[in-house]
Image (cartoon, rainbow, N blue to C red; front, side, top):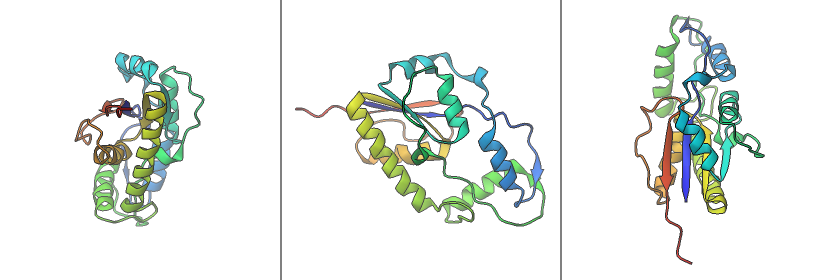
Length: 190
């Protein structure tokens, strides 16, 4: 059996900008709705998706569009269970700094327990456990499943899969857009 975790395509939401912590709300909304850079998709990903017994995705637009780029038939609805663990942010009107700085700061703070305007890490971990179970069920039914997902949520799901005895990459943090990570588990003897 195999489970393939793929990070969506790069959102093409414009140049980097400077914003206040409160303006990160609008920055995140633009990021969530941006079209993906289809031309960057590796050729082998389509082959991998066509070989999968099932293809599922997060309900966030960049994943729905990325899955559509694969050109595979999928009768499965996008599922919010696989959605990204969103960034928290503060309601401060200043200072204005690069959005990339705020992303790094707020994601680091989220890992330490800060969750203003989003779900806490413990809830994301619980959801990742449920997502891993869903993927395992799909793999048991179809032999293989591909998830078009997100960077942080894929990391959390991968950790849950390894805890359940699935073999695959230990570190996904530095992987880029369209990157696929394969997790395998031998079928139980019957």
